[in-house]
Image (cartoon, rainbow, N blue to C red; front, top):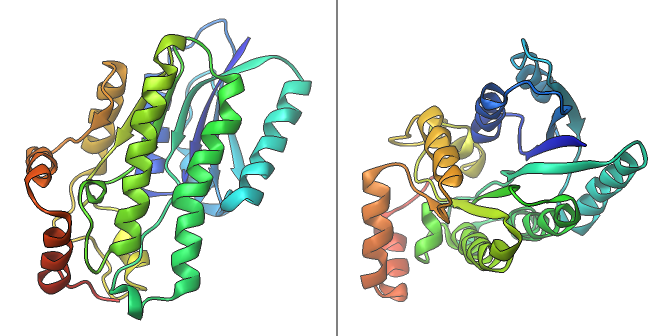
Length: 265
């Protein structure tokens, strides 16, 4: 039975790095293996896919908008079509698609905020749901949350809320799927050197401040997932921040970041 790895948001940043490292980690076996790279940008997906060579492992480029319920159903249809051509299982699902917005809520584009909720929450939930029938014992799910998940943040209100949802959902899903032998891990990075800030700031901040190496972040996450960890925080600073958030009042954290953590928007 063919084994498939599904990676959303695979066109750049952490998603592309997941693709590289998962491809390198896969061993060639008699069981057919395939990696699905999913994102909206065909050109960027092809660039990522071009790096994944040298093994008898198929790489499938899938330019697809998975935003919201409609996007989830598009992916569901692809899985159903794949089922018609032969039995398969999803060995690993990496839910990495998502984006953020900087700025006070009153000053941000409400349509953009709602689009973010659709992708960061609705799509993440739906993709997990449509993938479940194809997951088997030993399969795993990695959901990209954020260090922002641990505390409400001013100037980052909706993004932090979506990632709090992603973390909470992932932990609950891990508890529900434990008896089926399916592992769930929430990746909770702080600043990583990707295109995130450029998108979140509408081009006003080209690079993430003090961004960490995505190679190290993904490598740690894959190891944590393999060890059965429910969350993955690579940097010591991130782990300390997540721990200390337990002792900071939610309003206090939100008010402090609103006043002293301004973000270009």
